[in-house]
Length: 433
Image (cartoon, rainbow, N blue to C red; front, side):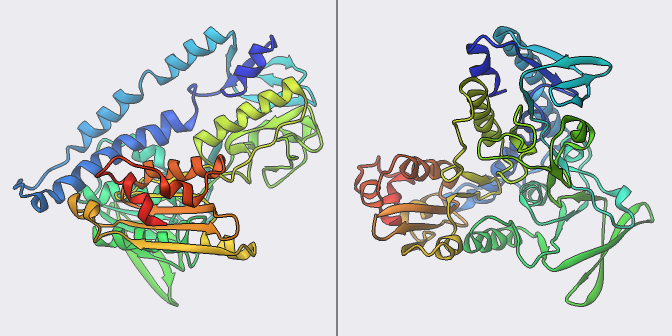
């Protein structure tokens, strides 16, 4: 979508090929509908803490079918609204499956199109798992469509989707297990922040196993049995649903990249600093089809804008991912921007690391926070914030203040010296550093 603004403003003719619904995964089958479920989990969390505020409530019961209906109602009009937006911009939307038939040509269900530039923005798809019984696996799309609440769920993979949906399920009374083959969870996030989220997850009953290798999935008495090995011991857990959360890969398999003279290795398109194919500079890539950038919807829009400007201006613009926040929408949430402590030290930066367990602070106690924690990493010589990580304490909102400071060169001292509205979570930023 981001590509269309600069290219249409320059008077270029633009066609968009879409095989499913306009907007892709995030608004239709990912971030947006998932956040409706997360909002329900947040409400359940607030009810759990009600007695801390002197409020007596009966045990709540989540009507899962009604929640799924609400989620569907929230997103129903997104494709049609985007279709109207594309019409306003003068973009020709073509429904179908595209594949390259030349370096500057594609075929869409038998129709041939040629263009000066072609943009691959095909998003990503769940990574397939080659284990016996993999046909029994479901994906997050299924979770967002299923009107029946399962009794027990196993997530294969300990990434973002497993934790976010795991928190929703656990608060709805579902038995949740997360199995991660690697020794660490939530790769890319600060290890100390992840430890807080793990503790918060286990507090609400989620069972988490790392170094757990799934051997097979069997159907037994109408349920699914997941057999895995952990600590050298073969174990099994039964569930009604087993969800593939082993990550996502670029959705480029059906594009016939070879016909487009597009160099790639195992679905990873080789690109330069301007998001162009190294072997075919008339082809650009953006969004989750870029294998080495964060798989986030705002990043896709950002990269689309860069691609559009490069098509108009020539290859002059490059993405900078250093100040883009990322959030894990558990309850409480984890929010992060910039370098982790490990990465900062790996780069040899001389840093001050400010770590705060804020659960005892008045603001956290006022709202009966179950986790309130922060880590701010400051380059000592320049007083420059190079990373910030928060769990709870409205971190998914406050992280943007740190991102803003990093992007525009506001020093740690300047951010601390600001006068904030009080009492707010934001006013605690002064004490975080």
